[in-house]
Image (tube, rainbow, N blue to C red; front, side, top):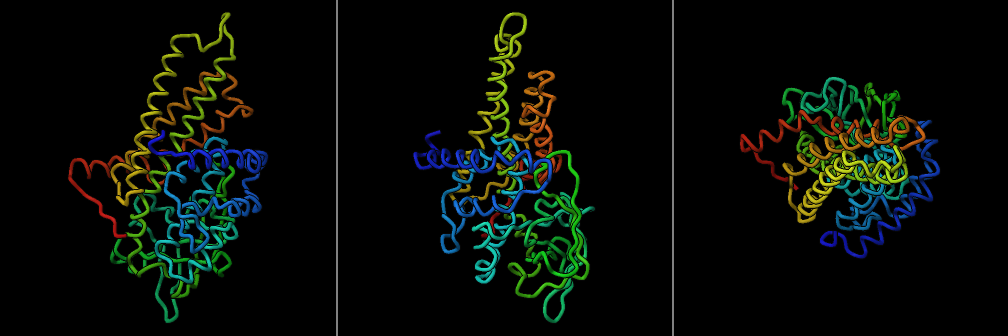
Length: 387
């Protein structure tokens, strides 16, 4: 894809792929079993600048174009641990995005910079037990006091929710105002009143996903991110990137699954010939390769829009909706083509199948995304960036 990736991009891909093979892959199976990603790897990512690709140089970032981020996401999918990849990108592109966009200079120096260096780990706390895709329905409150706020409520399905050092938390500062009464806060993990419970998941097992409770947690005024009651608009501003990330993750894991399966088919013999000679399988592979390539081209076009400062809500939503659907279908078929071996934990398709299933759920379910798109396509609704 020479239109999007130049020689520097390709060198970065080669270097990052080699880094992952050397520093990450040997530990993946252990992290998948323990659900704990050891701190040393965060520091190594930081030392190499891998958390700062899209962030200002003033805080240790590299200020590179977003195609470096896409390479980063694609290569992370190729090591076959959706949980490890999620822990890294939830830190780098969810929690840190709010610090960079809404944090003041102190917050950027004390939290964003060490996050880029891998010395601090962050998580973003939006979803609640009774408010998932309906962000405006959240019940967590932040009651104003003389010197700050008091948080009460709970969040769930939070990636990095157990072992992170700080939390970026959405809460209602004006409950009567609905979505116009939400604010964003930066909260240190060791603040009294915070408790977390680790959740046992079907997939993404390397990442720590938690349910977090806030019991009269005191937050200083200085830790309000941006303006009071502007939190909903901040969350919406970052949704396009989050949906695109999920879309890119999906096309990358589908591509890896198909590559692995094609190689397996070329080695597996049945009825006197390798199974890649059977027409039914060959044509299915051709169809899947076509769908993946079309997704990649579309997703790269959305990245280009972001690079140009546009706000592609419609396109990013389409990216997540269709890419996660195709990834699930491709991985289902690939597991089938491995037969009994596809069902064995020693082969990558078993884990990949579990990890991929979260794609149509996390970051907005496919059903919700269809309604978002219906409003845009049928009702003419438009979304504008406030940045």
